[in-house]
Length: 110
Image 1 (cartoon, rainbow, N blue to C red):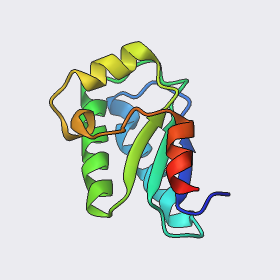
Image 2 (cartoon, helix red, strand yellow; image 1 turned 30 degrees about the vertical axis):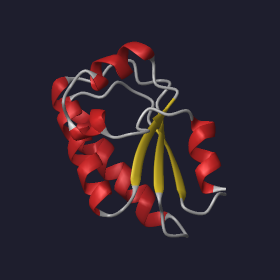
Image 3 (cartoon, one colour; image 1 turned 90 degrees about the vertical axis):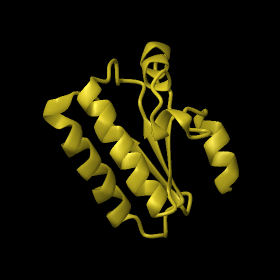
């Protein structure tokens, strides 16, 4: 366990039917953490696509986490998914370090 870090794995594409569930599960993981959190890393190697409505939900999640002073990052995200999310002018796409490597995120917490 690394204090301040929540690793969250999602094993499906993100689309409208479960975008809010994704957000709720992230917040549930934060609530269960035994230490104050500074960073949520979504291990996203199995996320093969993100629909427009899910991208909106990710932006909302990002903004809520920023308000709570928690950084949202994605690790191991497939390049086409990363490219599609980065192409938008959303707060998520514009946030520095959102798509950093997992090792880069771990190094700032240890």
